[in-house]
Image 1 (tube, rainbow, N blue to C red):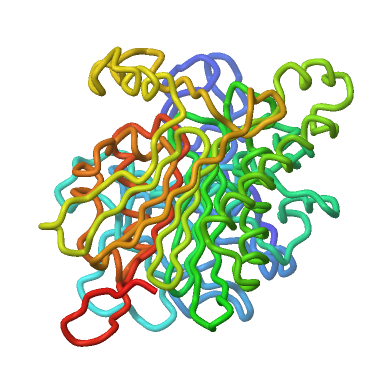
Image 2: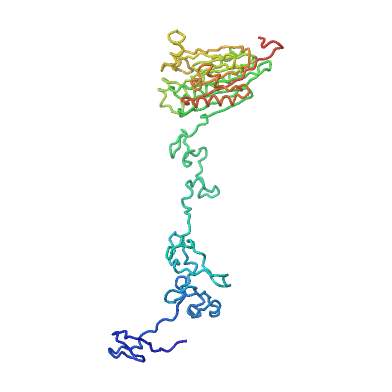
Length: 495
């Protein structure tokens, strides 16, 4: 309902500041119409979200001024509670809605219009009446100074919490799954984004990929071998083959072949692989036919040399444009092999790869079973240097015999032994014996239970070379040798 205008009681004229008397309708000094002065407001509205009235209030025309204590407002109106505090002018403190409490919006910006510490409603002394609204307790300490900004809630930014988006990708979500490698190719192990080219390098980051031959282990019932790239070479140029066959009388024969590619030659890894595979195949075919193991070893080395020679006449991975270079620097490797059969130990070699004998009873003397085809060995054989002087020379490891098309002449070395006690044959490349050169040193690093655990013992020997620096590829094969018993009181009776 509208109200009629009532005269305003003023003590001074708003126009000239002259004193007024009660009941004046006009100023006696300037004639100011005192009826034009608006009446002072007599309501204190509640602050609402965004400054707008509640939907029910807007529809009914009732404002917060008509709101009283809880339950006293018009039917359907929102009953906001009356603030308990009053300011110095006896004006009720405004009530703030939850949307105006301290916090952050969706963009991380602090919300405006939050309640200052000086205008928080006083906590109620007793339980909150039903239907009343209660603000949450302030986050600051109870003795915080009045006017201090309220504590802001801790917000965690999840956008940078995962440093590796690929690792946390959902494999079921095609948007986050890593790209699939084309058929026949592999993903790079370094960047996990590029694909590996045919040359073994990543097309994206250029990282060289691990090759299958970087570390190889194999174990049969009575022979084991381990080959490792080492710590300095970019690839493993060693190769090995281990196998077993049956002699005509049914007794087993155990075979181990170890080859070392000549790094200064072309495609040394192919040379060692071809030689080891070929020699092993020849022995597997010859021994069951009754060929003497020493003769079979000689034939195996000759066949291995022919297989390496063929690599010089075939294009390799480098292509035809390097044919002239291959003719001058043909693929080459060394070879050493051992056969344990019917109480006989046969070794064969070309180059500087070696075979050692270590008895199970370490009180017995160990022995080196091969002689190097090397500059140092020639100096010692000619009596020009002792062994210590020769192997201290920088030319010590220059080999004088190898398998390859440019070898001077092929002279396979073979030897047969009949040990009188059980032991282990160590067949290895110079990547191992450089760190255990003498038979005594090799016996010290070989585990005492090598005959019963050949694979474990081969791993220990490779680890010894890596711990020593791993300057070369490391390959070792172990063949346990058991002396056949022919009766009481006889350790061995030759056939």
